[in-house]
Each structure stands twice: as C-alpha cells, then as structure tokens.
Length: 393
Image (cartoon, rainbow, N blue to C red; front, side):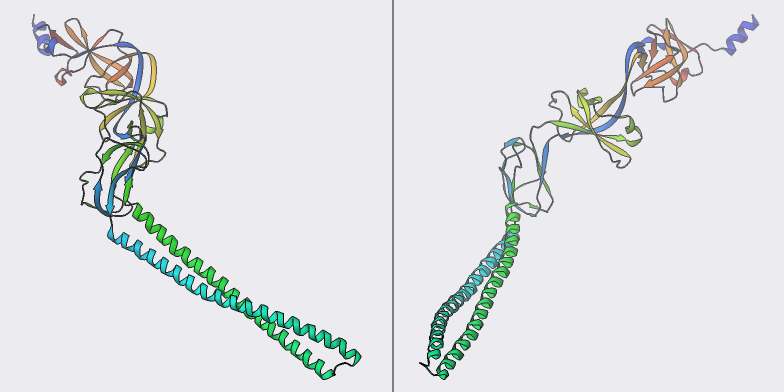
C-alpha cells in the first residue's frame, strides 16, 4: 500500500485539456510541394513611365487615371519661358547669320561675274591681237612690214598674256573665297541649326504625350495646373494592356534553387489568391536579395492594383507519396521534433523525423502514420509529460 502511495507522489497525474480547445490536423498522403515565401509588390507588366527632361510649370492637364489614350495624345503641357526665350534667340541668330551670308555671297558673286565678263572680253582682245601678230609674221617674210612693227605687236601680245594669267589667278582666288565662304557659312549655319533643333525638341518635350496607345493608369500625386516640376520628375504611367506582374524580393541565399517556369501563388488582402509563374530571375544581387518577376496566370482580381503589397509563394519542389501534416506551432527547423497525437481520450507525445517543410506543412518521414491526428496548438505546460488527458466537454 505504501508503495502505491509513493508511486502516486512520484508520478503526478497527467494534465487535462478540453477537446474543444484543440486544433487537429490529419496526416495525409499525396504530393507534397515545397515553397519559398517572399514579399512582393504588384507592378504593371507592360507600361511606360513618363518623366520630364526639363522643368517647368504645368499649364494644362488633360484627363485623369483610367483614361484611354492614343499614341501622341497630350497628357499635360508645361510652360518654360526661359527655354522658349533661348529658342527664339537661337532662331533669330540663325536667321541673321543666314542673311549676312546671303549678302556677302551676293557681293562676291557680283564681283566674280564682273571679273569673268572682263576676262572674257580681254581673252577676245587677246585673240585679235594674236591674229594680227600672225599676220604681221607672214608679211615680214615678204618684206611688206618693218620688223619694228612686228616686235611691238609681239611685245603687246606677251604683255596681254601676262595680264591674262594674272586675271585668271585673281578669278580663281575669288572663286576660292566664295567656296570658302560657303563652306564656313554652311558649317556655322549647320551648328546654329543643330542648336535650334535641340532647343525646338526641348520645347516640344514640354508637351507630355502618350508614347503609345494604352491607358493612363496613374498620374503623380498632387499634379495640377500651376505646379512647378523639376527635371526628371515622374509624371505619369501609361500601360498598353493594364496587366500586372509581381516583383518578389528573394534572399540571395535561397535564390539558387529557383528556375524560370516554376509555379507560384500570390496572396493579397482578404485571402485573395491567384496563380502565377516565374518569368524572370535577376542576375545581380542587391542588398543580399534577388528580384524575381512573376506573371499572373489568371484574370486579376479587382483588389489587385499597381503598388499593392502581396505575398508570393513559389513552388520549388514536388514530392509524391509523402506523408504530410500541418505544422504545429511548436515545430521549428530541427529534423527531429516532438508532436502530440490524439489517441482516443489521450494525447500521446511522439518523436518524429521531419523531412521537407513549408511555413504551413511538413513531411513526416518516420513516427507518424496515415490518418494520425496531430495537435497544432500544444501547450508548453505539457512538455514534462508523455500523455495528456482529453476531456469531451
């Protein structure tokens, strides 16, 4: 009798728990899928971000988010008086230089025309004098003229030839001056024209247009007429089709097992889920993370919108014929863990071997059988015991 009293003192009664307080998961058999969870945000998959290269004041604003746009349609207009003044001054300088070139060229062309006319007249006179010299040369052989007259004519022709050479040199110099003027003026005008074209492009760039057909999905917050915006300011986003994609940030240490084509699930607020697939994995690591792009594979819910934060679960592996169960809140990352299994009116503590696991499920490689009922919310107070009594009420 004393022995049983001492034994009762040494072995206290097991704790009790109401069945209604327990959350139970049945051990199942089937395909077990491993997952990698990562935070993600939704972005438009095919869109153009529109910014301004030059600052200015918003003078006109056309439409709001959701408006359909044709390519080239105005979204907003900026005013930049300083840029417009620079364009007017550059255009005036180019016109002035053009007029100056035309005036100087006209003068030189007039001089060249006069010189060429004078040269042609002189060449005609020289031809006549040469003909006379030839005639005198014939007459001198028969003694019809004095040799002195012939010599005077010959000296005259030689003098005219020297003068002709000088006139030809001057005409060539004048032609070279005209060609040089044209080349220099053309280079200067080309440079002026490039400046004007650049300024015109800048002024034209003050009219913000849709780069392609699509939907105006967003305007920068606070845009209004009269607002001054700085160069580089993001003004709007235009989407071709309004479709979304998710960009997930995966720890670099876990990205090695990812591959393009892996299936995934995106979870938003209100338990909204949608299937997705990995379409891109960044090759560069930034801040110990790798960006993974997932394409949505179903019609996007109304709750899904650009900028929304979602959770991405990428399915990294598939293992058939696995015994798996939901993970109790007491199970960490150890390979061997203790779980509580419901056996009639008691909970039995078992040591099991855990294989693959996700944030919600785990594979039991030993210690559990199909149909076992595992407690998901065990109490830390049960740790010293091997059994816990279960009350029906």
